[in-house]
Amino acid sequence: MEKILTQKIKLNTDDVSLYIRREDLIHPFVSGNKFRKLKYNLIQAKEEGLKTLLTFGGAFSNHIAATAAAGKEHGFKTMGVIRGEELADKVHGNPTLLFARQSGMELVFVSREEYKLKSQNDLLNHLEQRFGPFYLLPEGGSNALAVKGCEEILTPEDSDFDYICVSVGTGGTISGIMNSAMPSQKILGFPALKGDFLKNEIRQFSTKENMNLITDYHFEGYGKINADLIEFINTFYKQNNIPLDPVYTGKMMYGIFDLIAKDYFPKGTKILAIHTGGIQGIEGMNQKLKSKKLPLIYWQ
Ligand SMILES: *Cc1c(COP(=O)(O)O)cnc(C)c1O
Image 1 (cartoon, rainbow, N blue to C red):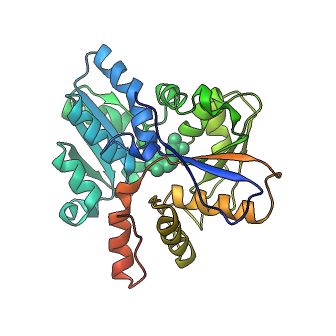
Image 2 (tube, protein in one colour):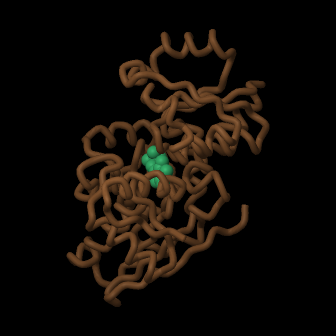
């Protein structure tokens, strides 16, 4: 793979320096960490002779969009099990689901109750009876092969960064980064959702202790945002010409800026933030903001 762009971010202090790794630019449709997470899973599915990828996601899921696009590119049939029966007749108004369907993904809508059982054999057996054999990707795409792919985010040239910052959803991406980081590097994870469960998830994929979860910047939960966050994302875009998504990378970057302002990092620290992508979700978020007459997120 070509070398991924790293850019310096403007700060109003010289005490520390901040860079961003543009994983969002990896692929036009399979952005950021979802590309990394799919890579070895697609190879495995081919080896197993399976022609269909099946996975799960919510209405604006980056993982659903990425799986649909990657499946199309690599000759797989794709199936997306979507949380929320009410979405079935709203696909045309939902940029993520519309993109997935136009990329050839078959969408199956299930109730929230049914969705909760997604890792249970009953539902999986039922889906297999209905649609035939498939390669199963978990919600968010995190499994051992996904972590292996995310171990390729950091390269030996990154060894002079003191801190690596990354947004956390299901924990697969940060686990890969923990595994391939140098012993001198500290990893900061910024959960995009509330809750305490992440440490255990991460423990499944990494035995290292080189990570801290910074839990103050979830903005009250997954997909929740406020005017402060939108303003931050838009100012960041104006100053750096780099779009951030409101669900993951915007919250992480907001947190990094806040920590810098609070002198969390020792003087001279070199920080690398991973831009994990998620830009496809902005359109859907802007639709919601528009209907609430709130300011929109700039990204192009
Ligand atoms: C999915 C996603 C994450 C979270 O990755 P996990 O491996 O689930 O922790 C972070 N950023 C973006 C943009 C994502 O789409």
